[in-house]
Image (cartoon, rainbow, N blue to C red):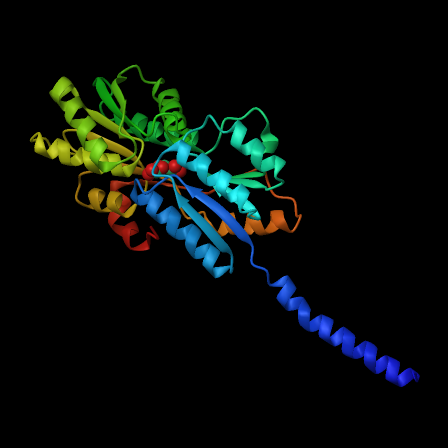
Length: 320
Ligand code: GZL
């Protein structure tokens, strides 16, 4: 075979192999995602962000809604393992009870990324990265706003009722801790009732009705771990013939559109932002993990505090 003929044949072989590469390289990343549920405006925005980011990146997203039940998340994670997805990601509804299923994922060599909420595990190698907020800091910010508010009436006893998030959830545990840590500086601030409203409007209203029945006019402040429970409580306060935002000062967390609307109506005094737009960060982290690149163990997102006097101006800028 002459040199030219051999060269031509090699070039043709190389060309056909090169033509095959894009097909081989184009295998889309497959992520199994277990979402807490659809309990709040925040969660709706979080789900939309994750789905949009996956679509934009050409990632195949297997999405499971756990309806706020841990056993549904464990079932979904086991199903993702059986399907041999490339990456498992989830927002753990509560902090504990994950060791066993995360060990199954590790043994299957499928990396796990936590978004939004953290887990309490002894072995930190059970997940590669956490992407979300510092909930203790969010609680502190709520506490600092109340300390500043209390300075206007230094001798007034301020009785606080607290609507906690889902029992056992990291944002509930941490927002409670951060708030209590800060308000301890002022002995006139006292939490008189504290109960879970499960992060929903309906439960928030129901529990606030019970607070009003037992504490009545003794309530000066409501601290709600999310805007949805605060919005439910606002309905209960109005139905009791009181003025939310005036007779009862209301502090909440998330910064969803409903909170800005309530602040513009003078019914909510401040919301501490908790950023749900984690989709792009999640997809980038998953791509980096699969590509063998190092990823940070913890990525916390930037957030602010929005008192009512900023609400009207900020409302048009809100992305969720
Ligand atoms: C916080 C998130 C919480 C929100 C609630 O990151 O886990 O869950 O504050 C949502 O609105 O239900």
